[in-house]
Length: 219
Image 1: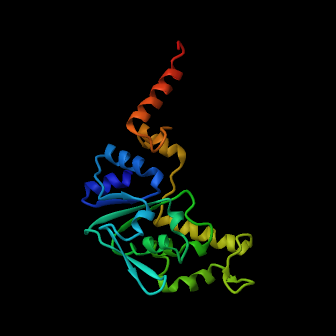
Image 2 (image 1 turned 45 degrees about the vertical axis):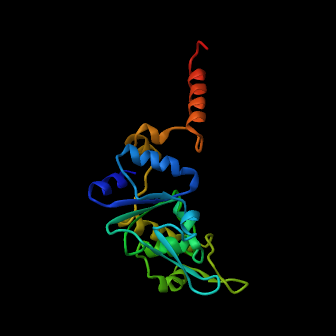
Image 3 (image 1 turned 90 degrees about the vertical axis):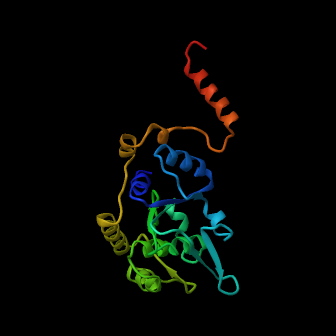
């Protein structure tokens, strides 16, 4: 959210792709920073292809691709980036389609635990080009499995070392890890609230009254 506020000040238009359950919270929090996003939408809504921001292109059969249709100087924020990890998923293609044309910020507690889940993320981090992905995966230790597909074993010491080197490389100049303490120190109180999601204003007021009653020792 801090990045959103900074980007807005520098003239970048902010777009958020996030789970449906936190759309309201994202909208509310951006508003508290004075940020008016172009949109805050969930990937399921976007990948249907009937919004003005993302078009869906059929490539024959079940194969599809996506093309972002955004103004210049946009920041695309992908919340829970691990949801976009599968290399052949529509979510992954949505994230991969953003690479190169706009600034991309990917947020996740754990973006990927395996190189096989890093195609769209890696393309955006400029770790490799889309066509180089499978060669990169093999360099990261993936091997042909019993049934012919590639598998990556996280228990192999050399694979653990490869992921540790990758982690240090990414966070050295492409990423930033935020601790819980940093969040508590830097973000406003509303980011640390326990308010329920997806309630009507009337129901939210009722819940708040109950909280207030429980907090009053005389009642």
